[in-house]
Length: 331
Image 1: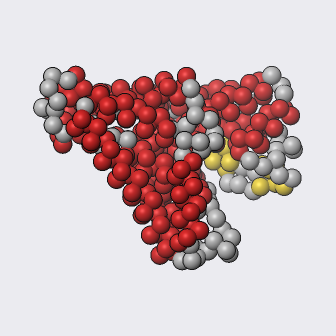
Image 2: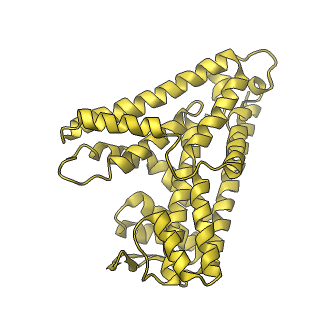
């Protein structure tokens, strides 16, 4: 998939991009990561507002509470957005590869958004390190939702690490996986729109909405099945491998949502920290299974989480380089 342009597209003269297809995957990824660090999108769905508005309109017009109409609406929105992105990429490539190159950067940049979560994580980490427990509780509530007035420093660190591990996958590694698999940024768009629908439709449980959101939730779990396991594997490789694999195999089945479960379990094992467990949230004690192994979560483990994510990203970039090199040698 890394060499897609060289396989299906007509090279345009001596263009550097047409000659070296790695430019269409690895370099856009690097530029998008740099762009997100310099100018993060933020937590609001400003760039995805048209898609969110269209999703809301489809749900109001097609929702009769049935799974069949939910499936139809999901296929319309995800299928059309993915197809339109792929066609736009192909047209730009035929016109001039440099336009397709820029399109890859912009599309990937708009589909990630991990910088917003990493900023929130850093702010909580700094507040805990400075001993500002109340500020850390407020920051966690703004990031995660809910109230954490009674949460201890260990609970805040634990919840922040869990949020960071899942966000690193869903807003970075999962997006990158599908960006590599499908032509241009169409894979990243598919993953991002599918996640948007899973969060907006699949999370609805009220009687008025019915089972309309069930297909969106199931579809995202299917799309995320392989990427989540690849991310968990990379977490295991760059951390404590034996503990990560043990936690993945023995603890992930205990968590309500399987995709998040393997990320949290493998991440906790790789870091050597206990995650999950009961927490104080919104004035109640939420009972949760224990995930991970090792000591109680603290500020040092939050710093280790940053290192784990960065090492995982470097491994993924290295694998892309190897795939590109293998494709170039095979030409």
